[in-house]
Image 1 (cartoon, rainbow over the protein chains, first blue to last red):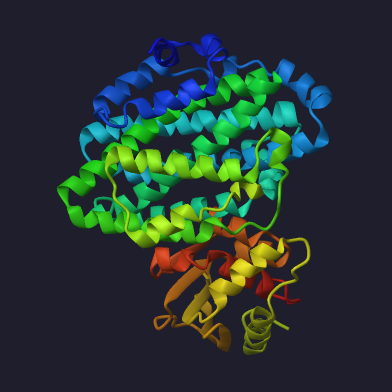
Image 2 (cartoon, chains in turn yellow, purple):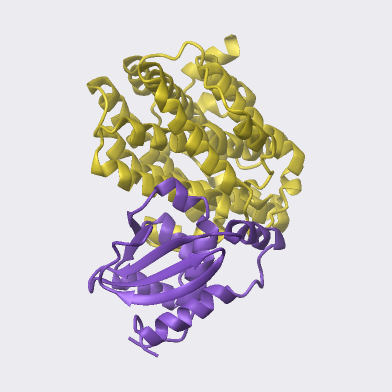
Length: 315
Length: 136
């Protein structure tokens, strides 16, 4: 519990010393209880961090002199998805904020700010450490897009189209649940947390990239609020109208159907991960959310989950 | 060959049936697309927002059986549209996946989840038809 208290209360300097496994445990600690939206907003106010305080000077040395080309390629490949993904959710979330309770809207304003800050984090990392060219945020995004794999293009594209669907009626419960399943359950709950575990474990075990480790660990702590909000939203939605469970199922069927496609392969082994370990990690992340929130799956989706392929970022 | 003419539509039909070059991408990716395409039956309408002109591709059992240019896409299962700038970018080699993810190409009508279950088949078909040599 002490470690989890440290996760909750650390400032940016203290976050650098946290273990990613403790942060992931912190993400899941409250899933059974699921704090209300006002409590999550208060937590945001305590945990907000300044992305411009991060120091990437040692990261630049590690990137150029410590890491092999294979490690750099794998690292760029797996993190480029979230370079674009953070930007994507920053611009897709406002439409979700148009619906729901006033407490939900107040909380959602904090998550939009989180996502904008995470976008700046990746912009700084890609610009200052990786050395991607560009004078503007968009130009750096342009430079990194070639590294984004289908693992991210599919779900983030789906989210963009679901945001357009939601814009037609932001209070439509079924559209909100479909959107929430893609965003909170899959993108935040499975993809983001898996990428965090993989890259942050690599950084910690190798002693590399302290600026990235600090910023992405702080991002992971932010994800705890995002995932807990999302799981509460899905749980409450289904409790209010059990028919909405079918919307979660249909969305998961689509996501799992497209999950296995990737056009390129990355050597995630160079970051210390085997394909089977990545597969187990993704399944575990999904199961932890579903079980804690009480979302039951029909047999066909259970089969699809068991067949999740370790294609995260083409790994 | 001019863009969005009957001649171009017929060339587009042949291009999506042939598919794009498979160089540089994993065989497993093309296997996924083959599975998505097998038995696929639906109609896509792909439009230019400024002109209101659509290319309608009719898929039957995994083959593009018909292609036509129309201003009325109401019978299509999935109606998508992009601005001229996006179409120009795609014809100049822009990434079709990015056009989807960045909402350069928008789904104006149709079931979002059903559309995305074949998303990479769609993306590669878009790549195939936008790589045709054309003039404005």
